[in-house]
Amino acid sequence: MEQREFKDTVYGHFAKISKALASPRRFEIIDYLSQGTKTVEKLSKETKMSVANTSQHLQSLLEAKLVKFRKEKNFVYYSLVDDNVGQVVLMIKGLAENNFSDVTKTRKEYIEKSEKIQMIELKDMLEEIQNKTAVLIDVRPRDEFDSYHISGATSIPVDDLDTHIESLPKDKKIIAYCRGPYCVFASRAVKLLNERGYEAYRIEEGINEWKEFKYIHLP
Amino acid sequence: MEQREFKDTVYGHFAKISKALASPRRFEIIDYLSQGTKTVEKLSKETKMSVANTSQHLQSLLEAKLVKFRKEKNFVYYSLVDDNVGQVVLMIKGLAENNFSDVTKTRKEYIEKSEKIQMIELKDMLEEIQNKTAVLIDVRPRDEFDSYHISGATSIPVDDLDTHIESLPKDKKIIAYCRGPYCVFASRAVKLLNERGYEAYRIEEGINEWKEFKYIHLP
DNA sequence: CGAGTAATCAATAAATTAGTTGAATAGGTA
DNA sequence: TACCTATTCAACTAATTTATTGATTACTCG
Image (tube, rainbow over all chains, first blue to last red; front, side):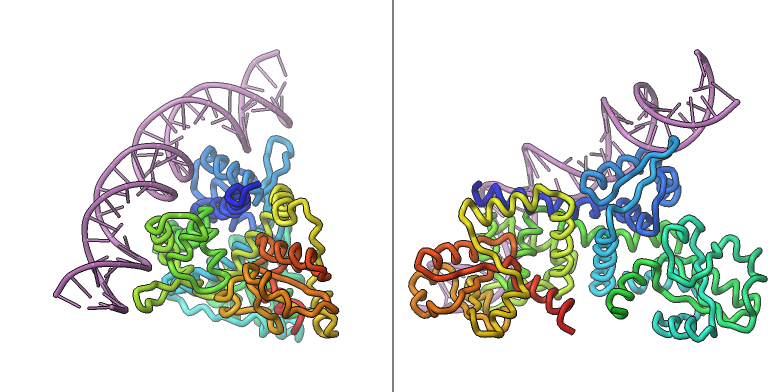
């Protein structure tokens, strides 16, 4: 095998994987899948794309072997092939945050809106939870909680929060988390909780950042 | 700001970064830059692209903020903006190796050719070096060694090996490393050393894998 | 100053990609 | 069996990307 042929093969593969992430819509799909398994229809709704278009993007993600699927009834459930894909996504987001100040700025403006959402650091959250001075709620949709969640968290999807708010203790802090720094659910939850007289905070991190955190800090 | 506008902004940025890595040639440029600072001309020679084309690719990498440059005399020196870029590249290579058996197969066939190149694991290498039963040589071009190298290694570029071979001890193992698993330099070096009666090995890892290794295993 | 060199720019043709639309499958359900 | 429903396929247009070529800029050095 010639050197050029070799390079074309291996760099071709590397580029193919990158190319799968190189469309904003496909990145969004992958990002959404990093929260758990989803059907084509759900992905299509979340991304506001036509089902055909979504399916087409999923085909290219399949070719790049970033996602896999299983069929059940007449639904097709897609998911990431493994955690490494989620990690790459996190790293690329990190690059964007580091190198484009615009990203951080936009995120903060949009997620925190003009409200004052109180934030709490992951390690402080951990301490509060262990001391039982706070409870941790996962405000993502139930199916994402079922896929995986931070251990010790209670599932209260943000849309159900209003009706289930009674179940939360008034004498403890309420800490909410959602899909991660680019997701509004936890902010909406904190706002509502504050209005109802709770002392509420959000952590920016979602389940995937949590995995990284555990990996790095807790041996 | 509307939700769609928000998503377009942030996912647009994420995709822009991925897109920069989505061409085999640009991935090759980045990979080469992960060994150290290079001029446009050097990059163009290494990748066998025209200077104009190389420059054009570098412009898109600049836009994605994956590389930076400094001017000196009438040369322009490009380098990666930071280590995170190198890490992303490593992770994508990892995905490719995990998910496309073709990549591993092609690599092994090409790098090891039909010769039997003896390999040694990183951690065993470390032990041998510490026990002084082996010496570690860096067979990449001198400028890459100067950029950064595994501490304790000696620089003997593979093209100079023949003339400098006398300087190596016959009574110790010689362990060679180069740019990483996709680079032939170390294999060529081991082959030559074996022919001259040395007991030689290669480690697959290059300087970037080494950084990761240190990060993960040595606190 | 003027020749020479490194790099970039600008214009183009060829190839690839993204989204739309409508039809086709294929498995469940009445 | 016939009808639904979720998904995929196929065809097409518009937009984007790639490599090439030749010109241009910017700087160094004799």
